[in-house]
Image (cartoon, rainbow, N blue to C red; front, top):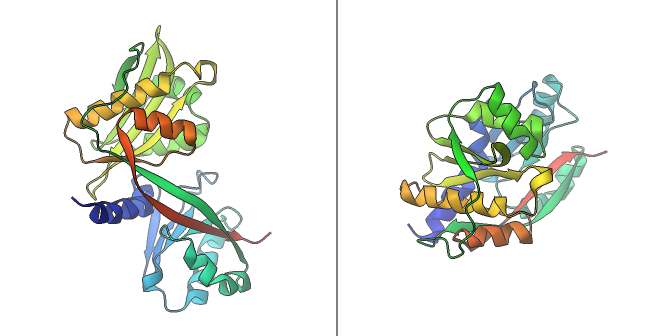
Amino acid sequence: MNISELRKRIIREEMEFPKLFAPHETRDYGLLFHNVANPESGDSNHAVIYPERINDLKRVLDDIMGFYEGKGLASRFSIYHPLDGDYFIANAEIFRACGYQFTICPDMRIMLLTEIESPTDVPKRLDIRRVETWNDDIARDVLPCVVYKAHFRQVIKDSLNENSYLFIGYHNDEAVSVLAFHVSPYGVTRFDEIGTAQAHRGKGYAREMNRFAAAFVREHHLPIAYQWPAHQTSEQITAEAGFRVAFTLRSGYATLAE
C-alpha cells in the first residue's frame, strides 16, 4: 500500500474513530458525536465536517449549534475539519459571524510502524498482560496510569471488543503502565493511549510497553500501525519501537467565541 492510500485511510480513521465509543448522528455534511453522560470528553462531543459536502456553511454552523444546544452541550462541543486547518482560515468571516472562534493546531507528525523489528532494545522488567473484559479490578489498575481518568474509563470500557487491545504492565504486581490500540475498519491500526503512573515515570516503562505493542502488531500480522506523538520525548520512544515519520497533517477546530 502506498503512502497516499495510507494517508487517506488514516485521515478517515481520525475522523471516525469515536464511533467506537460515542453516540453519533449522521448529517449530509458530517458527523455529530455526543455523549451527555461524559460531557468533559472532547472525543465524545464534537462535530466533524466534510467541506466537499457543504454548500451553505452558515446553515451547517447553525444546525450544529442547535443540535448541541438541544443536548445541553452548547458550551462544551467543538467542530473539527478533517485534518485541514486552512478551511477555517478561508472561511474565517463566516465562522466569526456565526459566533465561533477557531484554532489552527501544530502539524501532526504521523509515524508508521515500518521497521521489521524494534531498532532499540530495552530491559524487560514488566509483566505485560492483555485485558479483554472490563471490571472493577481493571479500573483500579488502569486509572492511576492515565491523566484523563473519566475519559479513559469511558472510552476504553466502551470500545473493548475483538478488534481492540488493552495491555497493562505490572512491576512486582503493581500496575505501572498502560497501552491501548485498535484495528480500524479502514485497514490501519491506531495507537490510542499510552500512559505511566506518576510515581513510575522516567523509568523507561513506556518504552517497554511501546516496544512490546509494536512486536505484538508484527507477530499477529495486524494492519500497519500508526501513532502521532504529542512531543519530542514521545516521538523518540515511538521511533525506538520501529515507527518512522511518514507525513504530516494540519488540523484545526472551532468553538463558541467567549
